[in-house]
Amino acid sequence: MQVGYARTSTEEQVAGLEAQVRDLEAAGCERVYREQVSALGDRPELANALSFLRSGDTLVITKIDRLARNTRALGDVVDDLHKRGIGLKVLQFGKETVDTTGAYGRLMLNMFAAFAEFERDLMKERQKEGIAKAKAEQKYKGRKPTARAKAGEAIELFRQGRSVSEIAKAVGIGRGSVYRALEAAGLKDSSSSP
Image (cartoon, rainbow, N blue to C red; front, top):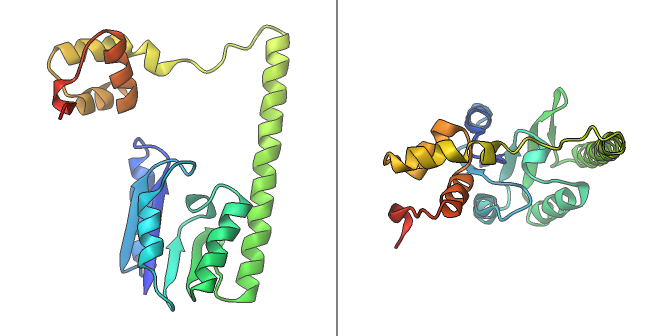
């Protein structure tokens, strides 16, 4: 059985999640687990998918970064799957599909995961150097605080009786940011109380 796993980091990435689910179903996945959480936090749907898989099954993902943030984490998941007799298929591996049930597929996966992690580390280094230079030249302003800038609008919508979810969607910020804005204004969302 082919079991798919789709993930995006934020709730705003709905189109990305839908595209992954579509690709997984087109690849023949009979069951698709999906979630919108950071790879750094708990991923309950990934845990459910991994516990559902049985020997002879294949876990299918669209890209490596949907499953793991670095080579070590990827290696841990792949090793666990192979010990249990479960394959891993990556649909978008450059222009190829990689199936790790064979030695060649495992080698390619590990090599490209290492290169991807290396590239990400280089990008972070360049970003830090750029920020340091901009700070030294007093040109660095940092990321614009989008949620704080929209707090007044969120509070006004809340006072008009809109729900936190409606406010978040209308203003274009996360629900957590809406709750923080309300808390800072001394307001409380009564619909979230037990």
